[in-house]
Length: 538
Ligand code: 3NM
Ligand code: MG
Image 1 (cartoon, rainbow, N blue to C red):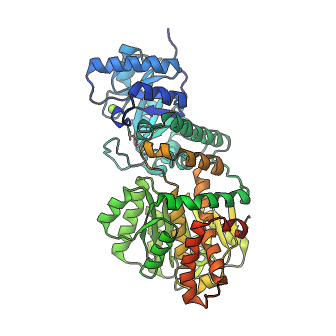
Image 2 (tube, rainbow, N blue to C red):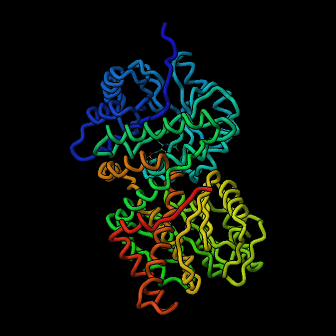
Image 3 (cartoon, rainbow, N blue to C red):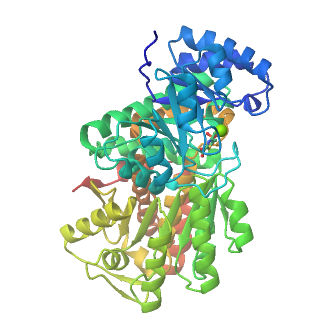
């Protein structure tokens, strides 16, 4: 009489043979994944006849068994029984849980795909062993019948589960870049995901063993953190180390030349596009909804700057934010003049309500205003506070509330991830004498965020493995990375100091051109940042 196997859900590989890279044979690829640390395998075959399916399942099980990893069969109870697989996974349109249990008995694992709280509760009361919650994000691996859940949707399901004794994995559009944010941001009330289920990012990797090692490492890191503290505690990292990371990452923008899509205000379009180019990224300033949809499907970052308030543009921006989130791209929001007028108050409230941002970056007036700390705007100029503790409170509270990184620019810039607050002290007063320097800071954040994206397809993840390892070890996790992205405003601030020092700079007009030049020079010779950067934790 067999007993139900203990399952480690950390890294659940769901197979899709059509995604294998050229020259990769399925069983060899699978074995590399197991060597890399896959903890559970689901054989998912949508078009195979019964006999070849059973043959493949038998061969698959020979390998998974050697690695002591359970094998789950997608949908087909008969195939699972024929090869004595450890379990069956069913979707909402497959055989019911009760029927499956009847066939396979009490000692097998049953997983159920769920997309909302009701489905989760039904699966729990029906005796599921684990839930596959999805789709988190847009995926091209499976045609989705419903909108992706986003991290908030996953979190809502986890929260509704309370302390039910059922394990959970998330699925859909999960890649190395978005795993940390998925793990950290979905953790709620002592419940967290037990693992992730991945198809394309592993099946199409040319270095499956390394890819799986990386994935498993990140998930374990978070499961440990979440188990200990409910929400992961972020450490205050050594600022010297952070500065070295900035120096290391500046050239990656030019190497990768990522797309940074802006929808920004009429005043700064040109300067923002030039600042993007100066850093080596690729700007596109499109506003039409059809463009917005196509561009969201490209890996990159989205910069949304609320400065020109107009109904058509606002709608395009909301669409852009949502589309980019579902494609796993970072979205950076600049709430220009957020509290200056009633219209802007309404529009910024709509953004915060309907969109999920990676970073919100504004000037002191805007951020204090959004945080309800009495910030004012005279037009779009900032009227800030001299009280550092109020500034810190504002960024921290806003970041916590909106589960993102919040940055506030001013004489000193303050940035928070909802826990930590760091102050960036570089910059020059001439920045305040030209229009759009704050918007340029948002652009710079967008360029850095985009440069850390990894192509969804595994072959390029493989190519960037070295970089990814650096990121994992140096930044620990993505919230940290995004957070440190914000510290990249330092790069712009240092450029402003260098520009202001130049003899040919006479005032705002020459300063504006010199700023873009110095940003360009810094991007080619980032070592200058080492001696110039000044930042401190609060
Ligand atoms: N089920 P990838 S999404 C098999 O939402 C599957 O239930 C989903 O593939 C669900 O990791 C999905 O390549 C495909 O995005 C996930
Ligand atoms: Mg199914």
